[in-house]
Image 1 (spheres, helix red, strand yellow):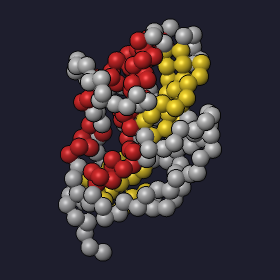
Image 2: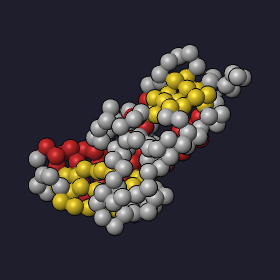
Image 3: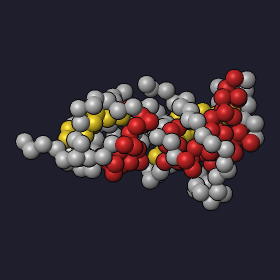
Image 4: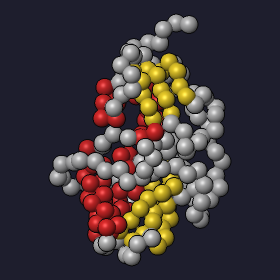
Length: 197
């Protein structure tokens, strides 16, 4: 019963959050506060994860969302609009379903835990932070696992990431390293430009 209520709560929050675009370790039950407004019917594609979650909630179903592939990514519910729902199966609780999802732009697998090539960490050094951050989200990196260090301020809270502007001076993992779902990404961002070597 708790799963069903949690599913309904998350779906309601996500349906509203998609328009306000909320922007934090490793748990896929993220929630966000939002104001009460209904999303436009054509705001998201029909296979978008928030659309599918809202449909499940309307049917009285509880739900969870997980990576449909063998990469083990945690579905980022803070940015659920960047994920597409590909597969469904019966959930662990009564009247519940599991959604298998992949980031938008990836092909849907034909079965759960399908093997896909391991992506490489992109080279972000010297690039604009805002564009790079969005690039990471669109590749399936979870915002909760991206640690941003800005100037000398240290790590930035998730709700303050939008105030970060500048060039990425260093990153971990290094460019070209294979994606690892258990590893946090660290980005060190200059207040403007990186100091010359």
